[in-house]
Image (tube, rainbow, N blue to C red):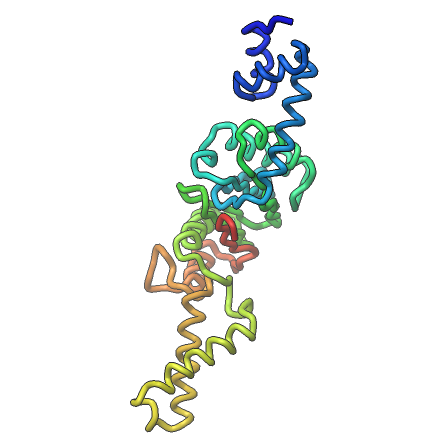
Amino acid sequence: MAITAQDVKALREKTGAGMMECKKALTECNGDISEAEKYLKEKGLAAVAKRAERATSEGRLFVRQEGNKIALVELTCETDFVANNADFIAAGEKMLDVTLANGYTKVEAEHETILEPLKVSIRENMKVAKVEIVEIPADSIGSFYVHSDKKTGAIVVIKGSTAEAVKTFAYDCCLHIAAFTPAYTSKKDVPESYIADQKEIFKAQMDQDEKMASKPDNVKEGILQGKVNKHLAEICFEDQMFVKDDKKTVTAKLAEVGKEVGATLSFVTAKLYVLGK
């Protein structure tokens, strides 16, 4: 059976496969477009399986707020070129649609179904790495930020007031988190094992310092604890110096904004998102 250019074009529009692949599929299936479509799908899925172990270190974070929910989807791929592909971006946005519509809090089959045809047509390994929904309680403000590279973002929820000043502060906190990438929200979140490890590191450094040898043990202990406290202040969001006022910690700025709006404010969520982590 003769294969026409219109047949090839029709199959290509249905499958997203290349022209030569469509022509070959039609030839193999005696010009039957339905069979050729099935042939290409089976071939494409087999190729997808072979690519499944390839590293996916590129991609994008997708974030959207609707009502009292903020949804996040992390979609990864092999190359930055694909991360900027319009179809890849559209898939991420569609995943936000289904996440918010269904209240998904983890990767579900529906997310994978959206991604499957893209894996076949683009020919890269891709993964839905993360799906989350952050709830915004009553009398609270939620905000989010995604950096221009689409690989770093933050979500912040502050409870106590819905005033405009709190909304602005919540967004500024998102900027702060994306810029300073704190490891923990507050000191109480830091594992004791981590603190113990840091003490050992600082103690080893002090033991190598000749000036420390003559100091009394209680002085050494005070210096050691001071080093630990300084380190914790550097890695804990609430104790870092605020990005827009480096004379005040985030906690102090929170209290200041609370006083301004006449409310006691607290962080419900203050989370950093980094692609691949």
